[in-house]
Image (cartoon, rainbow, N blue to C red; front, side):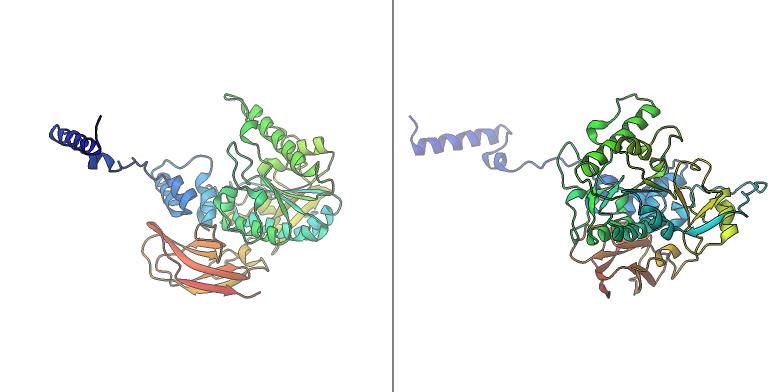
Amino acid sequence: MLTRRGLGLSVAAVGLTAGLSGKATAEEAMSPVPTPLEPVSLDDQFFGEGRYLPIYLDMQAKAAAGNAPPGGQLSQYAAFLGDEATAVGADERDRDPATVLPDLADAEARDALEAIVAAAASTRVVILNEAHNVSGHRAFANRVMRALRPLGFDWFAAETFTPPQEVPFAGIGLYAEGSPFGGSLGYYTYDPVYAEMVREAARLGYRFAAYEQRWNQQSPEGASRLEAVTARETAEADNLIEMVLAPHPGAKVFVYCGYSHAMETPGDGGEWFASRLKAKSGIDPLTIEQSQNWPATRPEADAPHVAAVLRQFAPTNPIVVSRGGEIVASPRNVGRMDLSVFHPRLPTVSGRPGWLAMDPERRPMTVAVPSFDGPVLLQAIRSGEGAGSVPADQFLLAPGQATATLFLRPGAYLVRLERAGGIDAAFGAITVAA
């Protein structure tokens, strides 16, 4: 039997033997071995750190090299950074000069918000679509959401809200006014314009529903496009009924989605969410198209139906247009939605988009900018939400820009820069009076 002293000598001898044989000593054996780390990806920087520039610069570099990201990813992402020239203009093509524009001499126009509010009074569900690369659509959706609240609309459902996952997480259903607005709530809500809409909806008392297709509702691998569309659109309709319409018979829902999802009748390669929701719920929704109607960055690149509306009516506010009882819209949407919203071409205001300045809730706040080199984002972060929250406003600065104008709602903000190498500490604070 070993005594305490004998045990100690034995351990020492073992350590000495190990040292002489080139093996680790007892002290070395107790030292922690560094865990191998995986490289930080661009997605990690975006989703984990809330940094926008790394992905943007990578996408731009690939596009410049002739390897642009597929599916309009660059234009959609550019919208998050307030880069309208890329977001709206990247894929524009001039019309054929020989194109004959539709004759709208007998058409009539109405203010879009007034028309929507009037039509919404007779339904429980309003569905508005967007193009995913146009932040101005989100600014208009914000105004629609605000205008619907006095009519009793109390649920806000959006395609982009992250649906329930296989691993539970804090989704949009738990979001409340004043809570940090993080990236896990949805993808397109990384656009500050979208995030501000959701923040205001919470302040106005809306509840939220993530009705998008869930992880266990996907179509089988190898499914055709039609099968994939059918699976997704059916799941979306079922989910909204299950989450909101069935358990809350008095609920009135504002739904915000993309493109064809708002089609009330089959077309464009399938039967979409709005059509299926109508059939399954028995509710005739008010369906509103705007995704094909945004003015191009140059008049000569406007789609024919957009050019015709702007030439005929020269609007200064969003309008809906009809002729002989039928909506004026893009050919793919005529007869498939109730209203079609056209947006005016507006001049910039203090270097920012005119549509941003149109929102009566936002105030222009001009700030001095610290010196910088290379690409830089100016960001306003809501005080109290934390450094990782989605900004309330942000945009790319021009080289050498010394002052810049943010459009902010009443509240307290920290102002900072995001550079290519990381996010600076806030360089100032600002309060916007009510």
